[in-house]
Image (cartoon, rainbow, N blue to C red; front, side):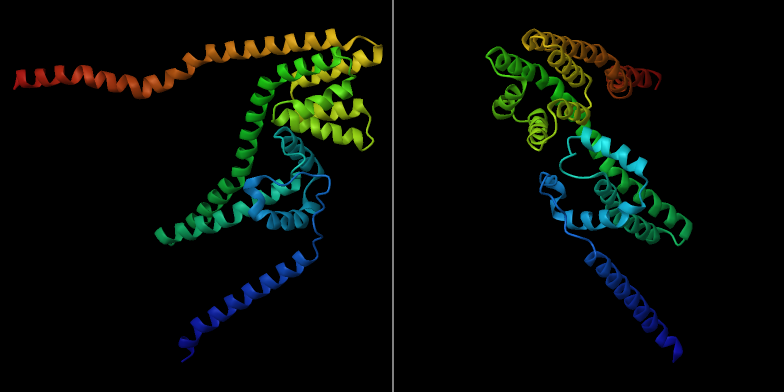
Length: 296
């Protein structure tokens, strides 16, 4: 009779453990304060359906994360154009929330094919690691796309600033016009963030330095340095901006030339592994068939 009670006792134990876990999680979540986004933009569109769990997990794990790790991840988040949308601890929370279910699915899937717990644990560890790497790969792709967008849009932005300065505006008014009339994109969004900092009381030089640090692009850093030096020394900003625009276009042309030179090298691997074998089969198959029938 006791053998018949074992499954029921085990199920009751699992249910009690799940209930206690959910109750403990609920009590922890209740202690988390609501997120203050008064000075931040909305979260990324893909993350909005799960933003509440991300915020809860971030608030719980942030005290346990090293400061150096948060600083390093924060710089990566800013360079991906997400500094005014999410924090570094929320990126870590996203990694945890993706790693946990994928680890459980990987372990459960492995148990369907083998009863060895070692292989199941390895499968759970591998799938969990893959889930944790997905946000980092997403961040890397956003950073690469942002660098390309900055490279394309920076010459036009400098031309617009030059036109405004030569029309009689100061540099702050020129940035204001660039924010209002410039093309939509990361540069316009970051200029808007810079103008928010200026209106909040930060100095223009510090706001421009933060703008360059968020973008992490050498051309933007040189532009900010040239503008700061020109303003400090009382130079005319028009010629300075024109030289910066010419330099930015020259760098863009050099990058395009370098990409063109790299293209044939990148095509070698597909040619060797895919196109050449098919070509050899098409050429030598009829010859091989004639030789086979000739010997036959």
